[in-house]
Image (cartoon, rainbow, N blue to C red; front, top):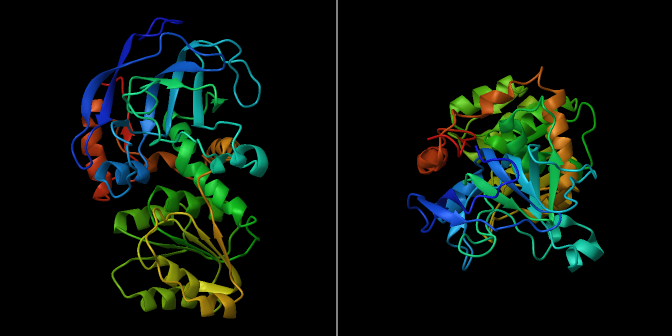
Length: 373
């Protein structure tokens, strides 16, 4: 444990230096002091996201991004902080407090000031924009300590919310919450299709169920994840072994031929867009969440027009979505076994294997506790 109020000179971190290669355990420097509004935390838990897997494998990459400390879903205990450091609700942050935090935003670009959309910030620091060889060095979750910038939106965490739940709320859960908000909420009794049975898809299944959906259909793989989708409220699960037309037919059969009032792409796999449009009901909505990168994906625009579909993009979420995500997990903990989303924790040395296991779909949400040996 780090003595309260003390900033270590360095911290152990698992650093991505080459895509597809094992992470390298290194000592990274930490800033000697915290700027006003900033904090240094001892990371107690990081949960891995599919984006971390894509970044590790190189399926998602940006010029000049390496070396990098992966992990953008994390919580920690404050060991030091700058003057007047507060959370997003204005509450003072003290040494020893447990906090979660969202990505940093600059507050002065067009996205921040004119659009007033944090996710549109031109200088948004988010999991893959902060190199490990430049100040402030350790900002990701796969490190024993992390520097939380003044511009990061922070939240003091309720004691009754587990570290894993709070960490996952920092990206996966808030992304789902934001997607439902982009869709304009959910009318009671509306039929919903969720494409994807990863972390996003499973949380979306639970949220649709909790919101009073009619028929909830989860499409994905492997079978173990579809079993979990059933426990999270899916009325129908559809695997990926058949042809797209077969999946569309199953959706139509489950919805009395109407189709889905809301289709959520939480997978981003090739071909999901065309399937989503075919699965949608007349006047329905299709929300694109899981797609990453500029890869083209054919969409039958005639069907979009003929069904008068609304097609919406949804990117991550902001601090309000983060707060709502934590409250959702908290309020529905007696309905859904959230802990089933998470694997047994490993230390930094096990992070590479955890990423590989997620890439093979063997784990939904890997858990790294940097303090473990």
